[in-house]
Length: 259
Image (cartoon, rainbow, N blue to C red; front, side, top):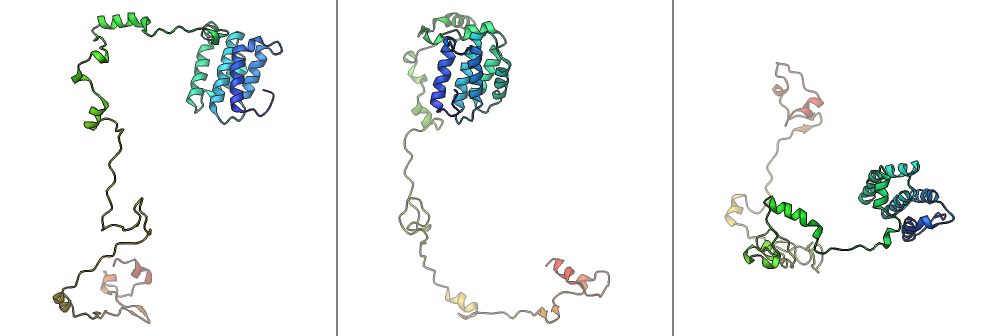
């Protein structure tokens, strides 16, 4: 821990070993080890899981020490507002357990990693709870192999009703229509040039419509000249003089008037 830079995995191993067997050290006291671990938490760590290991190690050492130093509480309070949910939860648990040192010692006993845990696969410790629920009117549990086949709902049934998750492949996409981009015109997975478009043949114009519009030549209708050397001449004097005024409007009035 004296080195300023340590690999994250090594720091996790150090935290676990010190938390379990720090009391065996003949060179450092428990309070000194706790202080060093608090300093390690303040290092710029990339992985917040490392701080989780350090908080748990400090919690174990505090349980063995019997008292919680003030600087430990400051660290716990600081990381109680962490965005890392696991780290935040450990700090809140630390805060709750440290109020009763006897409970903390029972929760985190010395050398607890070597204890053999007996697993009860039948969960017999819940028998009294189950009996109480049955007496209150709850229905007994029916194993899946004893259930009626009509009542068993599978994933396939859910998918057929449109309410379940689909684990099979979706149908292949349809080919693009000729009216859309052709030969790679933006269609994913195509191999043609990216900007080639479908060539459409224009329809033949109606001869009668063409003659009615004046033949094939370009028709230009004469337009009224409203601009001259003096400026715009197309405004109406009476439009800008509603109260009988014959004074010509200004340029700002002309351009501000609705068209």
